[in-house]
Length: 208
Image (tube, rainbow, N blue to C red; front, side, top):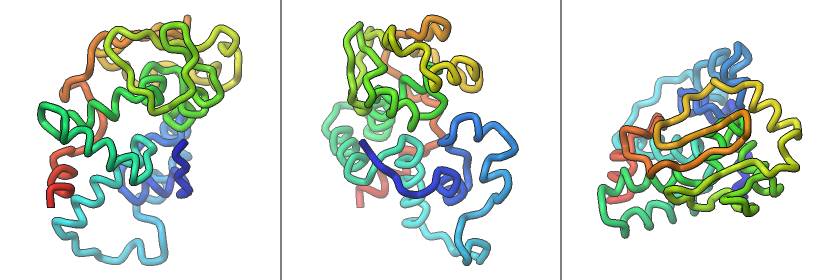
């Protein structure tokens, strides 16, 4: 499991954009970027001259933080995207979007991707009725994701149900929040992906 040691709110402030890493907190006035809309650190308010490389690097960092990945994990996804037929940037986002932890979050079964990973690691999530405890598991078209019958009353799942509606369920997914189950109707296309990421800038960085 990826362990990012930087506080979630500081990650959003560093990228100067909400990445929705703290669940309900991100939708409240307690959101860190609402209180301090500038990068953390003593020199945060100084004028910084942005270069092409720094812009590309920031976009990659934002993507890593949005999906909760470490550098090697993200690099491996990029290498796989390059080897897959299609537009590299779009394939990269499709691979990230179809991670099990992302789908559990997008279906509304968890309030954040980090919480979704925790549910998966603890064996609370099933795919087609079988327990899967790997957050990076690649979901395929037609597979059904559900919360295990014995896990539907645990507090994180209850909180996610009560906060239903804070995120929009994408069209490529089907979600039954009351029964805590959903289905992947098809693989996402670029227009379906809501991530605030410019994948072409990331491809340019890796192409150097």
